[in-house]
Image (cartoon, rainbow, N blue to C red; front, side, top):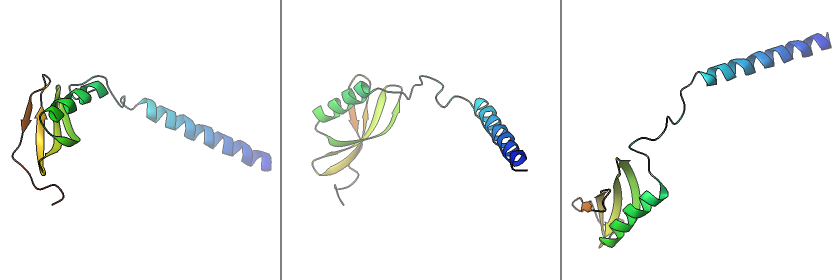
Amino acid sequence: MRLKKAATSSVVLFATLAASVAAYAGLPAAHPGPTVDDYTAADSGRAEAAARKAGYSNFEITMVQDGNFFLKGEKAGQTYFLTVTGDGKVYPSSPLSSVGG
């Protein structure tokens, strides 16, 4: 009886594992490859350097698309949304609010 129960448990475990593998194999790749939203550490470093050169600090990347970085940054006690283009031009929004307020 004990042997039969162990064999049944092994079969159930194997079937569950096989079903899991089959389900996983049917899923699309988590990352299909390079897209216009991909960027490297060097890319983000260049964008942040351009924004820093324009006088901004404390960056938070909010989005990237086609080489353009959309950052949140601070300057003179004010918070701004920044667009940094692939060629390093920085376009700020109007000030959003005081830092910390």
